[in-house]
Length: 502
Image (cartoon, rainbow, N blue to C red; front, side, top):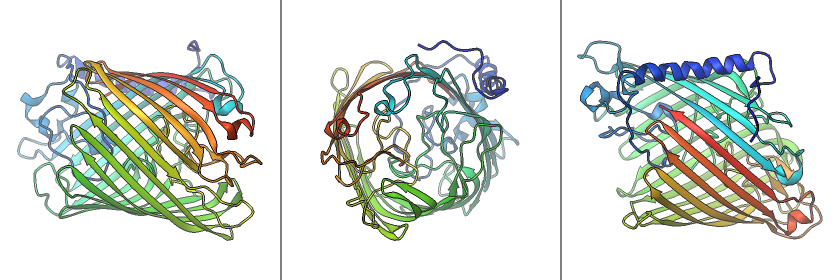
């Protein structure tokens, strides 16, 4: 493994700023830890995020994918404080008669080691020793009565030992990740539920459904945020969110991130339960880019995505089916693209090791003819950072594949997940793309469809309520298309990360 160098960033002062950010999070944790003995509550696997009201917790809740979704007002009852850091999750701002005035503090510190052999099939120079990534985040949420909330979150992302230099989401020395004001109108049906109408203005994270279209980009070092406005409405069983935003650029300096002026995203996402276990999501998303980049070339791009998702959750069965269709314009041509995805898992919690068998299926359209100005390449506006496993060898455009999965829990807090992806090109007229959606391999003369096979093994150990350790190994064996469109070296990927989150 790569040794830790004396400087954690190539920019002057990067180490000092990053360590100050880490110290900010850890100092608050130590102070709170002295107030109470540690807890060993095991965290469950995070669920997909859908816009919804926050349930009142009967047991210590786990950190949610979107930290502003957390609600700790139940901790005003001091007898329910079970964790070492519970005292900082509910800090009254007024007397007991006004429990809706309180402050919540939280944060995260993550150390990530990553090593590629033949990254991007050998297109990047070799880096045999690997490198380190450091993420630190700290947030404060101030609930100022039943109708006003202010949320602020700082971030710091640093890198060390990268022989080829940092990638775009690797380094952001210090910046504002989120900062918004939320105004609520109307009376909630139950204490602790959000107001039926909420307006959120400012910088914020967004994630919907399974994260296939809009996500926070969790696994990369620096998460994705957006500048703009969001309106949330609770109307009977329906929860609807409408928004208009610009993605926030990831720049490497200090407080230099701004909204990307070259693109905008807007749309709405609605969800409702059909039964206690079955839910329906419907959505429309629009995206405009001054310069879109596809395998056939560059051009101004406007894309409209409409789709739906059915998902089912019980202790024994988890099922997810999603379909999306896109129309729009690219340069002088029309866009007509589509995607379908399915994820199904059958669990046996009563058996030893709690095995779970699964099957993931997906297909994303690709361009039929690069000489024709019309385009059929499916692109997501802001997809999750690790789309097909931690290795991130390829993104969803022009890809068809499936993956059988096996999950085991052989010991308390330990989860093992093994799966194997099988990939093909959907269209012979299009190439391959990375996760953000930029072309990395041209269509070339080959008519082969086989892209490759990617087995992966992940191990996650929840050491305590706040601390987790994860390791991942993946191997990507190139298929016929890549071997006829060199470079085409097989990829080996190894990563391990330790996360402290409260």
